[in-house]
Image (cartoon, rainbow, N blue to C red; front, side, top):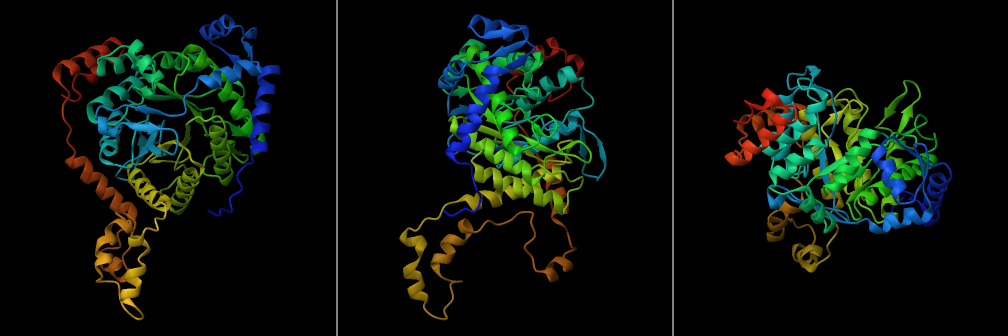
Length: 479
């Protein structure tokens, strides 16, 4: 297929790889964790204080242990997901501290918002797995991620995200297993959950993120290695330089993951952005950020690793034309780039805000993208040569049997985007697609129901959470 987009050539990928090897061997990477440093020392790596130096052979050994594809299980086995190869799975945005609520008010997000988000996620077929979405203001920072997982287990039957070390034990309780069995399953390509870790650019990994990486690898939880470099601030200003640094940080973290557990499933992070030099913020909606992701996705395939990126991001502070344009560009570009796991639905204002209306509008955008990527099939029935001959000159296809057989599956029937002529639109109240989304959100939340967990399982989960700092907060939830 002809494509005007200029992807990198093999020689360019080789330059990125060689540059990363040179940096890791001669400059090294900083690790704050004593456990991680001890593990590197045990395996013969050269250390200078908290800086670790890597040889080409050590990096290549780690890469040989990695897996290119794996499954993430779900409470409902039919909703388990495949990651790697040509797969594409989608999830929500993460870490928004504020929400644009259904009344149009911007306010701090809370735990009830997260519950409502889970109800929408469960109801939308487009969303395949879970991420953090909002940071509840009514929970302490040290416990809100455990609360998120606890809430997921009560509302959603899709694969879980485990964003805290304390959540590993809760996952084991839910699936009635232990971390040893979880680790063995992951080595066979079956992960019990998914998480992400962020390096500390440039060229570092904090103690907290090192612990999260090592503990999740020990428990067979898939880890997305996500540097999130910023061109011009935490990485070189050029996209090429940022790709080299992103790759370097991923390789350093990847080596650690494979020392912890050879074969532990990891994803290659394609999450960099450029810096807006006017305000020193990340410009997640910029065209250059899309170019960076495309290059990083190529590097993931270079190593035969599954990939993860943020999707549907926009710098807009409104759910407006800019938000739609930047989000759709993001979805199309990531799909063309072959990224496997895309997290970002329902977010705007540069990652900082969430919107249930945008969550549904993003799901509509993704339906367009999925239709765009459906390949042609020139089988006799679809090529329709006989139908064209039968109808002949100046005929009509509207009542043909062939039309009746195909139109429902051939044309995507938009649920929120407007397809009415203007006169009908005006006569029916001039309702915008955002207003339609608002009504749809309200309808889903009002009519949502979920099956309670089995009582003994619910009790085990509550006891675990109470023992890990949630205390009275969970007593009256999901009863």
